[in-house]
Length: 215
Image (cartoon, rainbow, N blue to C red; front, side, top):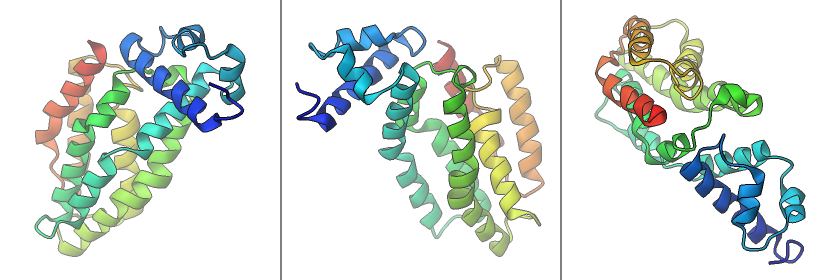
């Protein structure tokens, strides 16, 4: 395959192979040479023409996963529901994030964000600038309107919930024991209850995610 004649196909092939190897072997144990060896004759130069490093490949793989992520569609259905309060929608959105199949595929890669500052930075900014602003904030404002959520700081609480879910209790960022995770989750429950949101019954999904990563 010529990288000059079919650049999009070449890039797609590299990402397909890298994603498969990241899932099969784990990100840390997959080398650039492993990826090259599985490209059917594509040269090292062709790979580096598209990507500067393994971290660059991972970033592209994750962006592709997020772009096709079914979670956005599930969240849209929850947000558009006419039968749930704002508080219930927030809980359902968090539960959906913990049980999403495509998110699970990403977790199977064994990525540890503390070892990849670029990815951690992207996750942090995406949590505040995208998820908090566009997903959680409108639902919190709806909850304030329907009386199920109590807060004078809707934007700030949306950011806290997004950062809590994506960073603070995320085992890909902070790997912890089941006991430590439980304590974090209990603290998160205390915070959300002050707003009228009881998330206590979604803990099993979070613990399942932790075990999926550590196995």
